[in-house]
Every structure is written in structure tokens, then in C-alpha cells.
Length: 337
Image 1: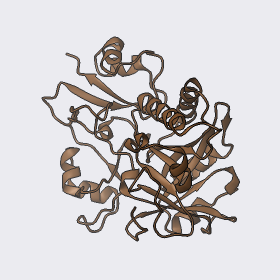
Image 2: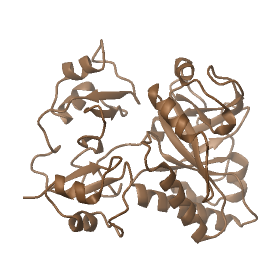
Image 3: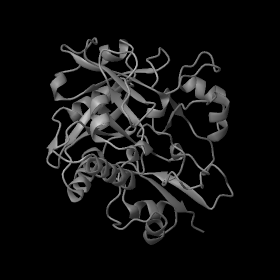
Image 4: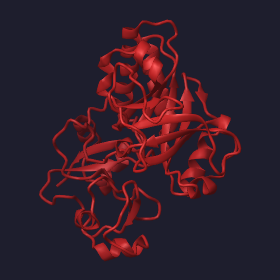
């Protein structure tokens, strides 16, 4: 597995055990990513979730969520996945949604692997967002088979600069290297992490990541942000010129809005405010657009907005319940006449 590197994002993960957090100080200390506990089982929400989310976002930190999973049966695994999604449905995640698995509950390796995969598949189906497995080295070696390696890992292994052999994954996108770190803004000890760019959600404009129709970016969503601007997270390989072209605007406009003194320097994970031009879809001739659900949306309102029908959107996106859509879910929509 990879070793720690100065080029990785510095991160922490928190829960109510972390106490009251001064996120301004956290951000000033160089932390870029904060994963926060959202839920556990099917009836527990971390009491600091909303406060952590609101205050971390206010300081421009990238946010991710994790659910503490207790494997038992397939039906319970699906119920936990749905509870996780319900818990975070009004929050915007910048990072992959994380399954935290640390207990075996006496189950076999194949059972635990299967239940975790059922959970992850359900979360992906309900949200359209990518996922990651959080676990520690010895647990992976003892309780997983290689089938789960189709999902990336955020691995915990303390006191080392390189995670040890786990029998399943040979690379990581997250590495928790300490459970007793110190960060300005947090009075007690805190879990310390490094994250590779792959931990960030990549908005490729597709509800199903295996679809080939990537004509638009999920960040094209009109009105996603209350300030009236598109908010775009810089991905590896991006240039300001490419981003400007994608959103039918100019480099100088983006640079001015974001106080960028050198247009040739942007950072992976940096969130840019963009004033989109007159473009309504990324490819004018495209038959479809992609829409990212925002808080308060209903399928009926979205259908009216794009001159189409609820049935059309439901069919295109394989929605079994037209009354159940989630914040950040990406809907493929056929343009009306």
C-alpha cells in the first residue's frame, strides 16, 4: 500500500466524542477534509451531526459522512443503508459516503463481506453517489474476502507510515494513521487521516456511473446553491480554461469571483464559485440533461421546470417511488418540446 505523502489532503474524522469544535481553527491548521459520524444501526443519529456539518461547511472544509455498521442479516443491512441515506438526505457531501465496519458480530467472513456489499449497493442505488469502506488492517485480514475490493478502502493502521498487508486491498484512498492526534480547535485527541483525491465525489453527469451518457456535469445543476452560483469542486487535471469553457463563461470571470490572482494555479478539491453563461446544457444537441436534486425539490416541480413528466423522469432513472428522491441524487431528464 502507499505511504503517507505531503501531497495528500490532511483530514480528521469526528463524532460527539470530539466535543465542541472550533472549525475556524481547524481550517487554519491545514485540515482540508472532515468526515463526521452521521448514524449507527437504524435508530441512532450522532447528536453533533448538524452542528459539525454547519460549522465545517461555513469554514469551506470538505465534508464526508460515515455510518457505523453492525452486520446481522440482509434485511437489516438494507435497513441500515436506508437509515444512513435518510439521515444525510438534507446535507451535501463532498466525499464518498463511508461504511464504517469494525465489528463482526460472530459472522463468517463470507457473510460479513456479503452484508457490507449489500449495504454499499443500496446506498449507491438510493443516492447515485460513490462509496468507500472504512475498516482497519487486522479486521480486513480476518473478516473480509476479496469480493469487497470492488469498493475502495479507507484503512486504519496506527503508528506506521505505510498500512500493513490486509489480504484484500493493495492501495488506499484514505489512511487513518492515528487515533490520538492533536488539532487546533479540538480540545481532546482526534483521529488523523490522509486522503487521496479519489475520496472526493466526481461529478460525471451520470446517475449510474456505468452509463456512457456523460454529456453534462452534475455541477451544471441550475439553482443548486442559494447564492445563485454554481459551486464546482476542482478535479485532478482541471484547468481554469477548461472549467470556463464547460460553463460557458470566462477565465477572468471565475478568477474575479474567487479572488484568484494567478489563473494558472488552482488546487484539487478547491471549490470555485461560477457564474454560468447562457448555456442550459453542456451539449446543446444532447437529448438529455442531468439534474442534481437540491433540498426541497419534488419530482413534480422538476418535471414542470424541464417541460417533461414525472413518469418520464421516473422511468429514465428507474425510480420505484416517485415520492422518494434525495438531495444530491442525479436525475437524467429528457428535454421537453
